[in-house]
Length: 202
Image 1 (tube, rainbow, N blue to C red):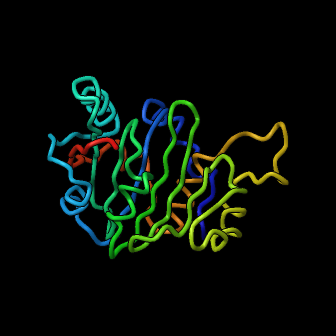
Image 2: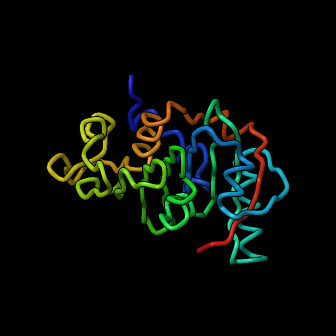
């Protein structure tokens, strides 16, 4: 059964610092070292848990505002990348070449409420949209996941009321799970020791 937005409301409640601005990316069949190589990145010290990677990301930006921290771990056949206050995963100029021969699923939110979701396969953009405005979609298969998006809880124009609570970010997590089979959990974010790297911000 497909997860819904309700299954991820814990993220903003449990990890408010990370939830303010982040990019989560899942890449199939490649180890963290290969993903970092494709992003032309360099190795940084490992960090444990969301608090440490968030602090390390801001420390790096303070010392070198041209580089973005990337925290990585393997989850089954997928590599999870977390960029606190980052956006490389949804930047097509970076993500599409890096997705060669694999599947790349990424979603992003920044502190100003700007958001994006990207599903790419083998260098091709299958679907891109803003989770807060899912009526507008582009890519080679923009409508393939439309029913799933409705079921997950994305708020389409005709379904939105003035009193509706914004669950676009949790819905993006649920859609990423639908595409990858990877469920992000509080324990994963809290207890994992992440391999870290950094890459140039485009």
